[in-house]
Image (tube, rainbow over all chains, first blue to last red):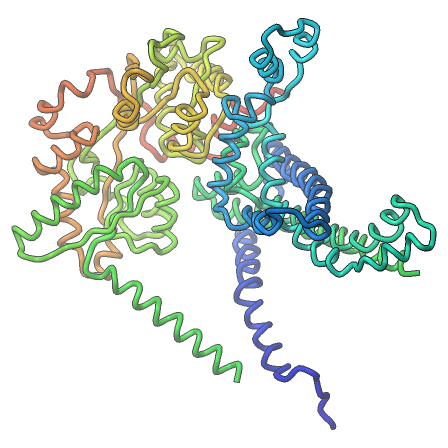
Length: 298
Length: 335
C-alpha cells in the first residue's frame, strides 16, 4: 500500500508530539478536575447547584462576561481598524500597548483599575453620583444653577459593583478581539472596497455588505475568547468587585473560598460546573458561526 | 523518535526537580503567613548566629509568606516546609488532618499551645476619630462603615468575626443575639476583600470606611508608616487572644534529616532573644521578662481565648465559617 505523502515532512512526529503535549498540558488537568469532583458524589453537584449563592454568582459571572465581550467586540474592531487602516504618529506604540493586558499580572491590573475607579480615584470621583457636578462647579467661577441641578443626580457606582467587574473584564478581554480581527483587516485589500464603490455602493453599503461579513467570524471568535477568559478571571476582578455575597461575588471567588475551607471536592465540583456551562456556550457560539458561514456562503 | 524525545524531556524534568529540592536540603523552610515577614527576617538572623555559636554549623532559613490558608494548602499539596508558623491553629490542623504530615496533637508539643507570641484584634480609625468609635457596639450604628476582609477567604478575618460574636454574646446574653449583632455589623461592611492586606489597602489607599478591624501588629505597622496624624488605634473593651501557631512538620524533617535544627528553631522562639524580637515586631511576647519590657507598648485589655469561648478552632470553623455556617446565614436574604 503506498504511503500517503504529505507536503510537510514529519507528519507522524508532529502528530505524536501534539497528542502527547495536549494530553499532558490540557487533558490531564481536566481529567483531574473531573475525577476530584466525582469523589464528592452526586450530592455535591446537587447541593452546589441548588445553593442560591452559587446560582447568583454564576449568573453574575456569565452576564458580566457577556457584556464585557460585547463591549470588547465593538471597540476591538474599531481599534483594529484604526491601527491597520490609518497611519498616524505613535501608531506602533499604540499597537504594542494593545497587548499590555496580556502581559500585566492580573492582580496588578486589578489594583490599578480599583485605584482609578474607586470613589476617591481619578475616574471614580467623576463617575460617582454628583461627581460631574463637582467637576463643573470646581471648573467654572459662577456655576449655572440650572446646570448644577441637571448634573447633580448623574453618576453611578463604578468600583465595588457589577459595573466594576465588567470594566475589569473588558480590560483583560480587549486584546483578544483586536488581535483576531487585525490580520483579517490586513488581508482585506483596498481594491475590494474600491470595487464596491465602482459598482455603486455607498460607504454604508460597502461596510455593511462587504467589510462586515468578512470580519464578522473573526470578531465573533475574538469575542468568544474574551468571554471564555472573562468567566474564569479571578485576579483582576477581586479587588474591584467588593465581593459582597449575592451582589458582587463572582463564581471563581466562591471556588477560592471553598478551597480556603479545604473543601477540595466542592471547589472541584463548582469548577467543573463552570467548565461545562462555558463549554456549552462556546459550542453554541461555534455552531452559530458554522450556520452563519453556511448561510452566507450560499 | 517522538517516544525518545518524550523520555528525554521527562528525564530532564525529573533532573531539574531533584536539583531544585536539593538546594533546600541544607537549610530550613519556614512557611508562614503575611504579616510575619519582618519578624522572621530578624529572627532568622538571630537563630543562625545562635546555631553557629552552639553547634558550629551553618544554617540558612528560607521564608515563604502568603495568606495563612493558602500557605497551609501549599504544604498539603507538597511544599516541603520544615516548620510552619501560621495565623491560626486550624490551618495547622488541616495539614495534620488532610495530609497526615504531623500528629493531630501537635499543639501540645510546645509551651503555650504552641504559640510563642500572641496578638489581638483592634480598631484603626481616621485621625480624630470623627465617628466616636470606642467599642464593638459602635460598629453597628447607622452611618458607620466598617472594613474587614471576608472570613471565608481570610484567616485573620475569622478572628475579627469571632471577637465581635463573643462581645455580643457576653453583652446581650445569647448566641441568637450575637448572630443578630454580627449581621448588623456586616451590613455596615461595604467591601469584603479576600485578604487582610487587601483590606488595609482599601482602608488606607481607597479611603473607604470609618473603622478598620485589624491585627494589632498591623495597626502598629500602619501607625509607624503613616504616623498618628492620619490614623489612630482604638482598643475595644473585649477582644480575642489570637494565638498564631508554630509546628515542626514531622514527615518532612524526618525525610530531610532536619529534625534537630527545626526543633531548635521553634524552641528558640521561646528564648529571651526570640521573645524580645517578637515584642520588637509588635507581637505580644509570652515570657514575663519580655512582656514587662514591652508592657508600655501593648495596651491592657480583656482578652478571651478561642478554646474558652468557642470550644476550639475545629468547632468554631464548623459552626461559623463552613458552607451553611453562621456567616453564610447572615448573608442569606430572608425568604
